[in-house]
Length: 295
Ligand code: GLU
Image (tube, rainbow, N blue to C red; front, side, top):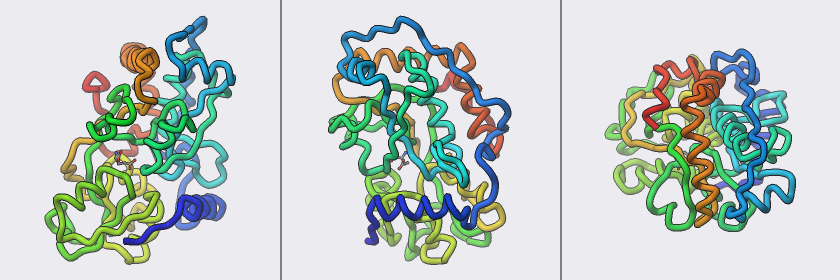
């Protein structure tokens, strides 16, 4: 199993960002674009019963863990200095309803494997990072949501005949340490040769060089890469799991969890969820817009 450290992956992403290597497009290319949504910052919020909220309020900023290399969801594209994507919009929207302005959010890069430790150690106050809600994770962290449901899928070369997880026998498939898709391959598709890194961008580089035959993770993430490498890659398009995305929170901070759930509920009625989706994942995903009510 190949591994790279966070630092190396971080550098690789940094270099990609600097050179724009192999990537096309500009910040905001993913969705229908238009004006960046603005979320009303709630006034007079007082979550005295939430230790996490109180600590953030005292510090004058809320720390949110997000991905930096997942176009459309959480990504820093070439030439940009801030992350953007659907998860970033959800983070801004929820932070606003907790009383934090956009410039009071500190984004912190997380990779799949360090999300639970980051919440447990207090490095971040919440995580919005394509984070599947499941029982194992719920033993150590809490979740609000879900706010979106993705499904595990495969990214392959445009001319590949891989058409689902059952055709992975004897093939090299890349995913990320600490992710549900890697675990699923390990448990259910034992004939596939799993290669793991700490971040998906490294898998994509391996797919391009022919080092692996497929990349597996959530369809929403893979569509972002497919859009960047238009004629080179395709998403198989037959999701074989359900991945409900939640907002990761420190365990047992019920006041915060309730407030974040309320914020997500309210965003469906106010139209903010829809605006966030259209501005980011939106029509570039090639799939119909899901109804927020489903979540
Ligand atoms: N949603 C899956 C997970 O939480 C895969 C995406 C990711 O690694 O962030 O593990």
